Length: 393
Ligand code: FES
Ligand SMILES: [Fe+2]
Image (tube, rainbow, N blue to C red; front, side):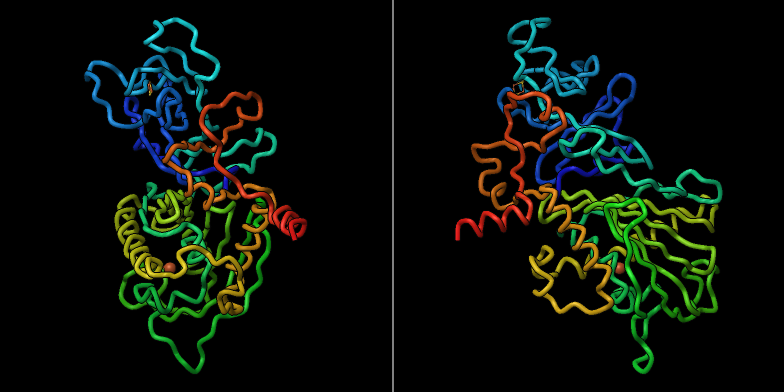
């Protein structure tokens, strides 16, 4: 898991005006809320007073708002934090009395796009941040987006990303695609090449496969004859995977998985499905239903993988040419490691939630000191680790 990328936090439609949403991402709790103008904010959920959960249970009177004057109110002793993470009021010293400088929590840059509230979880200054992925066809004429579907899965997000890059699993996992039944005399995955994603921070590939004719009308009537089709996609950052499925030339789906790593064992996938055919709104429901059925087939397989995370080295699996896209994704992860953005999960797990609260460091940590909650432990880059190992030897 990595800091310094944009992560989906909550669907726009699920973040109301008066109700904060508590969300766990990268192993730590965050709270999202809207200010009086409707702008979304995402903060560390941990109140620096005595560890109250800003988005947690509220037993105050219903007449007392949880969000007041653009501030989120801590349910424990009523401290009020504005969207920039600064405490504005501490009731016990009197409303209007200036809180101490240490009364601040991490606040994350936020963008609302594609029906999702995204937060930049990291401390990079604005000019150095990997941008949020541009979904070029979103809002463009001739394309229609389904409302974002949330898939909650009980496995590590990198295993999920790799599955979406895997052209060799369809015939075995997805009989409902219509590709069931392998001809043992002719079947193989065609060779393909990988390249960098045009927006950077990831890889891209397209591969040709021979699709037999569709049986019945499971996919509308868009493709009936079968033949060579192209599918593929790529990654963007550690947690976004894109799939292009051309059901026939000029007609296809573009599927975006914006993945929210909850922790090492849980992931919430924000699934945006775009299409340039079957544009009628009444097709949304059947497309959702179909996508859910396909996802279920993947989920059943991925629940059982061992090890649960991507292995420490490619030599710990027997990878084939069809796995080239997965290798290219892992190469990008290695680059993110090199930037020092990888969370040190062992160090985190050892101390998390015992005497220590952690927060993902926000950009403000580069501008001021005196932070109460500890920043997530990070692994130094692979080369720095190797160097310190060599020096110790
Ligand atoms: S713990 Fe939040 S106000 Fe006391
Ligand atoms: Fe799949």
